[in-house]
Image: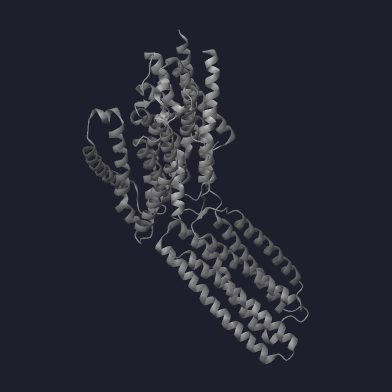
Amino acid sequence: MRIPFISMFITSPFDGLQQHAEKVKECAWVFQKAIECVIMDRCEDFENFREDIHKMEQEADAIKRRIRGHLPKGTLLAVDKFELFRYLGEQDKVIDGVEDALDWLSFRSSSGIPEVVEKEFMLLVEAVMAPIEELSNMVVEARKYFSSFSENQRRLVKSMIRTLRAHEEEADKLEDAAKEKIFNTIEDSVTVFHLVRLAEIIGSIADHAENAGDMMRAMVAK
Amino acid sequence: MGFEYYVLIIGYIFGFYMAWNIGANDVANSMASAVGAKAITIRQAIFIAGILNIVGATFIGSHVTQTIRKGIVSTDILTDPHLALIGALSALLAAALWVSFATWKSLPVSTTHSIVGAMIGFGIMAGGFSVIKWGKLGAVVLSWLISPVFAMIIGFLMFKTIVRFILSRDDAFNQAFRLAPYFIGTAFFVVILSFLFKTPLGSSLAIGTPMALIIALILAIILGFVSVKLLRKFTHPGELTGEEEIFRKIQIGTSCYVALAQGANDVANAIGPLAVIYFLVKTGSVGAKVPVPLFLLFFGGIGIACGIAMAGHRVMDTIGRKITTLTNTRGFSVDFAAATTVLMASKMGLPVSTTHAAVGGVLGVGLARGMEAVNFRIIFQIIIYWILTVPAAALTSMVIFKILQLFL
């Protein structure tokens, strides 16, 4: 059947975007478990968690490639194509950050996280979880906006972006607090380097979530 | 019974086959947005499209057809009735063959373009290249480019209007009711105008253009408000998603509008050459224009309806499952753009394709950022197949003409 009408409609990138955001969220949960495991000492599952994250990162990568690969030139989208790619890129960097953090931890897995800064790291991880979870909600609500073009819906998405920004600020403060504590309580310079860098990597996860929010702000701009 | 009658019978068969093809392929495209947006079920779409295509073909379809569609070929070639008979038959056969081939190979060609190509082939065989009026052909070519573009502009503006004045408002539901009379009224305005200008009933009333405009305007306003009264009665706040629900109801109306426009516009593709054969057999000669008897138009309408009933289901099923991102406001914009373009073009005597107008409408909404993902490049694909269709149908027609000349 000759149906130019059908061949016009291609798979919506929003399906993939939503899947990718879900994947990011799953990753975040595993990440939190992995960090808790490290802090609880005698962590035996750490390598399993790392393996899981690694697998999820690859799956997310496949989703990302699929989205990018299935948008031929001349595709009309509800949003600017490059803003979409930039958004996707930032969302993907969240997973990369999670993976990096676990990898970095594994380089010195024997010592783990010293007890004096455990609380700081728990709080920091907690703080970056919030923006990650917000991401997938934001994608769902933004998709609703692109379908309904309702001003209320747009306000909702904008408020979620503001929340993301607030979360990032919170995470930033906790990152600084963790670093301060590390410098002031730990003497061993190798441990200090390891932990400071770890705090930075975890902190960067929230940064990328915030950047994703900024790209979303550009996409919902009128 | 002379050989003319055999030709006439073959003409009937292939005329019916062309009409069947229009029903089977093109109707699915025009009903697609309504089915895709879940405004109507497949069963309803088949029913609406079938009935209204018959009505559109019979009552709005042009009752006078130009012997050679749109005067692309000089009528000098028609002075020999025998040659003209063979020519009309070979054009019809060629177009039918080409459309079948395209259906088999899934090529996006248009029945309109096939018949025009076939007519050109006949013209070249009967009178050489000198009988082709290249200027006229150019104008027709231009109209094919213009129709998707025109539909695109209407689709774009319509969707932008809906977003600006309805969707983005806080009281979208009420705003939709407030503006519905204008949308519905405009659709009625175009339908009434084409009815007044194009049908024998309209011509027999002998109304001048300004008068027709006034009548259409008044009727459109009345019908617009009556429709909204009905709409209010049958739509209650809280049902589904408010404004989309209103447009879902309006879209049932616009689907009818598309089906009507399609019947009126496309029936000539199947019936035009048949009318020439019919006229030649009955009177022995043919001029630049032939009257098309009502029963032939009805015959064409039935052919289209048969095509819809027999093959439409499969196509529309595919459409319904594949196009999930089309909401009712988008579907309405697409329908409105397609039907308006087709009715206006056929009013101006341009042979446009309903399918291409519908494609243009979708792209317009896509440009207005109304779709999650639409492939714009399909328009270039359409242009390529259109460029291929005309010479291919012309060549086929030339070959058939030669063969028929040997035997008849």
